[in-house]
Length: 349
Ligand SMILES: CSC[C@H]1O[C@H](OP(=O)(O)O)[C@H](O)[C@@H]1O
Image (tube, rainbow, N blue to C red; front, side, top):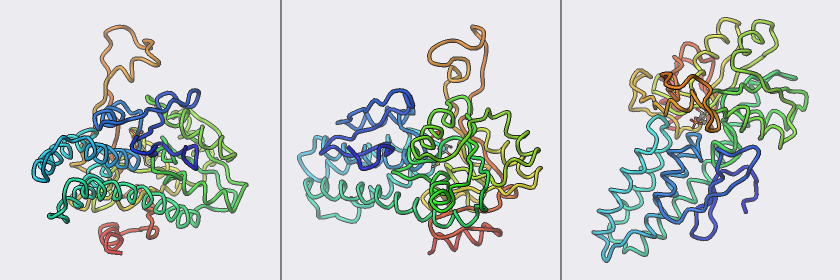
């Protein structure tokens, strides 16, 4: 059992335990994975979700693969392992953390050309555990930097779930909230439900209730009205992929929140570790946007909401242009314009 009940993924000896977030907040079911395909399926079905958590899960899938791959010699092991790395990377396309984590784990294999299969298995497992610890440390640092942008008694609007459940623990946007609350119990969080997967009403609300942080659930449609009534002081969201110029992909609807914040002169911050930044992308125009099953829109809990046969669009993310972003809160500081320069500097820190 992990030290924090909100850790979405943890090791039980050589088993990868994953909380099935599709069933939260009312049921806590743990998926116990012994094969990489089980973890890949958990990522695809969003049993585990959240860019950093998906990266950690992808890395854990590789550690399971290293244990279960049938390879009599290191060459066969390496050949099969490369194939598995490609499979894991394809599990979800938008978040940068998945491919980033796979590359980090694969680098262990490349950097140890003389290692035998047993040594590679150990080195890969150690790398995965290090990535988990590094993500938690990064989130706590994001919280420490981020609390400085939260005014005393602030009413914070957040979107989707960028909490402990979306990372290895503690969260990014909710890491900022946790750090601010630790110093100022008068803050108040407004969490958007975040249709259609309801990460806000099911997961963020769950985290805030568990932590005893004053909070209110709102429909996505209510956000603009609250901002217009001057009932929101700052918006803080997570991210799935940040381009070199600061354009940011995040849950569908984030762009709407950014436009509304701009229209109401409310600061809009993105909170993310550097593992979410994709320096190879000059801007957000080429960030791959995952299209998910339209039934996530037309149905809920297996029951039809829309008429039978109704077509539905279900892009899982949108891209917020950097001009709508006040700052990007990372583990090495709050990045401001010009993002191309400050992001480059942050990646070199
Ligand atoms: C810590 S940022 C997590 C990020 O991932 C979420 O997407 P999904 O639930 O589809 O994995 C959302 O965009 C969050 O902001």
